[in-house]
Length: 161
Image 1 (tube, rainbow, N blue to C red):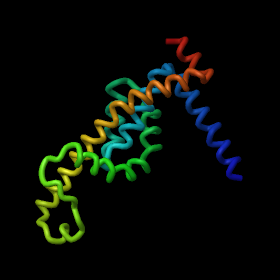
Image 2 (image 1 turned 45 degrees about the horizontal axis):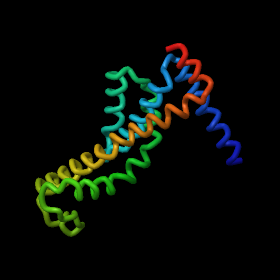
Image 3 (image 1 turned 180 degrees about the horizontal axis):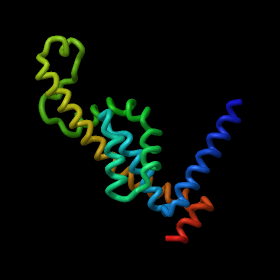
């Protein structure tokens, strides 16, 4: 039964990719769109990726459904990566005291100090994400372009451009 569901999901994904490609988007544009969606979907601040993906798609004339699909596909990964990005950001960009936030500290600190500390951690996590996201988008774009060029609908869309 699981194989049947998996096969249906793969067929459904292939149909969606074919539809996206037949909308006139080249394999390179689709690869960039998906790579940006995956990378932006991993931003270590909840709530930002969906809006940022929409703005980027509209600004760069990328495929909005494709970028949002990639964004939503990696949403669980976003949650998993928040702490590692915060740790990496703390190591790479220590802007103050390098003390980790501990539960006991949270109970005995002022709300303003807590917001300030959490904002600093979010900033460090964002910088760490940026350091990783730029090369990741480049690598994913090259890889996805190669994969998408093997899909017959992509070849047809590429010859139209």
